[in-house]
Image 1 (cartoon, rainbow, N blue to C red):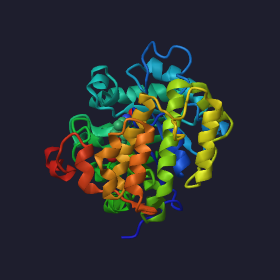
Image 2: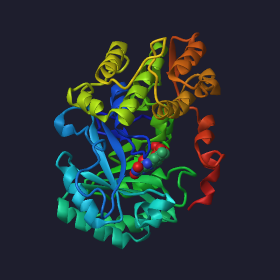
Image 3: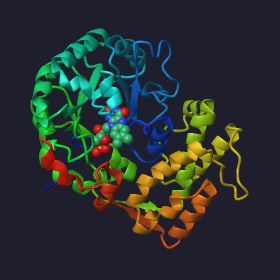
Image 4: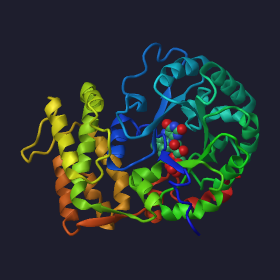
Length: 399
Ligand SMILES: Cc1cc2nc3c(=O)[nH]c(=O)nc-3n(C[C@H](O)[C@H](O)[C@H](O)COP(=O)(O)O)c2cc1C
C-alpha cells in the first residue's frame, strides 16, 4: 500500500499533550532534536479560582507569535468551570490561534471533579459548554480533544452529532473510551468515520509508533487532517522523521550522552532557575532545530552553564544534576532505551545514581556502535502498559 505523501497532502503530525511530560524543557528538547509541525502542552487544570490573574509562567512562554521556536504550540485547558475556560482562554488567545479543551482525561480525579472525559457522558451539556466558549472567544478559536466515549466506543456518534455543526478549530479523537484508559487498540475506523462527515479538521490519536503502525491504519486515515503521537514519540522522538521519510532513523551514537545531558540541564533550569530558560528562549536559542549538529548542543550546554550559577560540574566535567532533573532524564531514557539495540535496554544504566555514572554506563554499552537504527519494538509494549498483555488480546473486552 502506498503511503500518502504526508507533507505534500498537508497531513499534519504533532506531539500529543502529555501531562508530566510535555512541559517546556521537554518541548524545547524535542523540537531541538527533530522537526515537528506542532507540539502540545499538557493540560493546565483550571478552576473557578485558579489561576486568578497570570497564567503560570512556564505554561506557554514558547508562543509562536514571538517567533522564538520552530513549531506551533497547542495549549490545553482542563476544567469543570466554563467561566474559568473563558477567562484563561482569553489570556492564552493573546498569543495563539486557538485553545484546546480537554475532554479526554480518564483519571478518577478529573472525572470526579466533573472535568476531562466525564464531559463525554453528557454530550448535550458538552455542546452547551462549547457553544458558550465559541461565543465568548470567537469562531475557530476553540478546539476539543475527546475519547470515543465515556463507557463505550459506540458513543462517539452521539457525541459527534452534538458538535458537528460548531465552528471548532479542530477535533482530536483518542480512539479509546474512558473505561479503556490505555487498554486495547485505538479505533481508527471510528475516528475516520467521524472525519468523513466533519467540516472542521479531525485529528486522530492512538498507537502510532512507527511506519508500519501507520501503514496498518492507512485505510482509516482517508478523511483525517492529521494525527498526534504521544507514547510512540517518547520511545522514539524521531518517529516523525521516520513517517516523513518512510524509513527508520539512523542515529549517531556519539550524540546520545550529549542530548541527554542537555535534557537534564533544561530540567535543572525548570526546577532551580526558571529565568535562565526564559532568557534562552527570548534570545532565540531554540529558533531552529539542532538535529544531530553536536556543536549546537554543546553550545547550548555551555550557555546554560554560563548563565546559571546553580549548576556545578563533577571532576570529569559532567553536570551534577539534582535528583529531580536527573529523575526526568531517567524517565525519558526508560522510554527511549526500548528503541535502541537490545543491549541498551539493560537496567544497569537506569540504576545509575548520577549523570556521570549514567554516561559511563552508556559509553561502555555503546562502545561497539557508531550509528544505530532506532526502531519501535512491539514485543516491549507490555512494559509500558498497565495491563501486562499485548493490546490486541484485550480488544474484545471493549465495544
Ligand atoms: C503520560 C501521558 C499523559 C497524558 N496527558 C494528556 C493531557 O495532558 N491531555 C490530553 O488531552 N491527553 C493526554 N494524554 C493522552 C495522549 O495525548 C494521547 O491521546 C494518548 O496517549 C494516545 O496516543 P498515543 O498512543 O500516541 O500515546 C496523555 C497520555 C499519556 C501517556
